[in-house]
Image 1 (cartoon, one colour):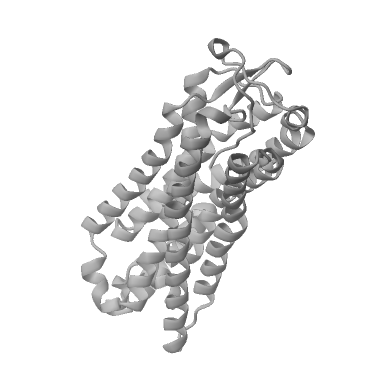
Image 2 (cartoon, rainbow, N blue to C red; image 1 turned 45 degrees about the vertical axis):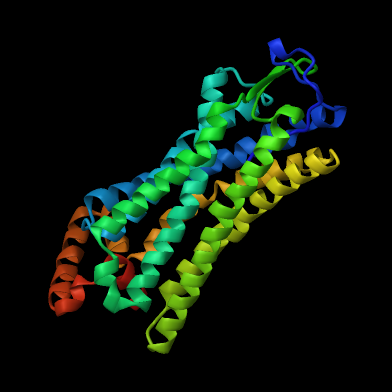
Length: 348
């Protein structure tokens, strides 16, 4: 994805100078971008970072090292990396979209922003695929859900992150706007240098890192719900997980991806892509809310995660009694206690 304003020909390339239309100059320092966006990002940071750090602590130190847990840990790490660069975006917008930390750090921040966002999308798809195998094909789950496959999926996630980051790391992101005396970070990119490069790149990224994982998620969740319904099992948690995941894709991520293509397609075709700038900026901020929702997906996906989280948040003596009774209950359940985390949740 790219936050992009149409620019005219560079007037002084040695000074990294670019010229914007009057409408665009107003939009780039309007209250929408300088006030509302920092507030949205601040809410995401304050809610998302503590909840993801708690989830990471529970997953790493309080749960069994099962192959499926690696997927949840990866998703949490990706979300944390995205959240950690939000303060730089907050300060940037508060200061009127003026970047003071230099070109290299602007490239790193924007590369981490988009790379981890798309990495999070594929993590959600792999979690959905893991639940699908565990519940729809339980007899094949032992062979399919292995440590080796977990390692392959982990590598795949980080390959996606790196591939999404490379074009932003290799291209200039900061430009001086003489009219406003500010240096933008990724908000004003030269038309002639980027329309033939970023349009096909982000179109490919949209298809491979949004549409494809979204298709996998929808298929897997529908199959899981149908299986639970056919077997006459309770599926309240499965419904909640499905609703949360679809909310992430449809409400958080879909608008920003659509407006991304609208911005680049219009700008390439007739030069009107700048009209989508403010709506896209808002949708981009909304897309980061998926990092706040992911820990709640863990909560409903895994019964053990729920128990461990409650144990971490409640008083020690009470939780010790609860954990003892839970261990007694699980030990009396025989072989069923060996079911992996992601499959237990949907059977309760």
